Image (cartoon, rainbow, N blue to C red; front, side, top):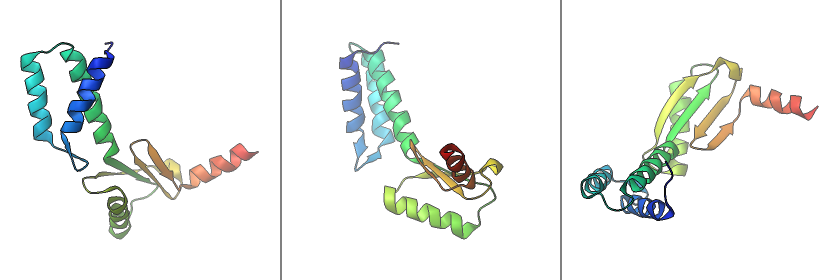
Length: 130
């Protein structure tokens, strides 16, 4: 669906109004979506699409995936969580994955950011250098 510039601007503005202190107020977002769905202003579908995209991007930025070759001990996992929370703020969600292909080390993903300290990444870097 092609969304007009006006609908994108309105959707982003409404989404910013639902944010307080860099955290999303879900009740406000629900009220905004309900009001738009009921009143159906001009370009309301585009506004709803933009709100959906903004919410999806926000949630992706608040979700951290921690991958390791083996199961992390609780102290290491908690240490990573504490450092990420201190650096990026409260409200992060954490997901742990075991990925044997990493061979060793840890890969951390938060939205579009990736911190890769795995053995596989180091080997790939060496292989690409030749």
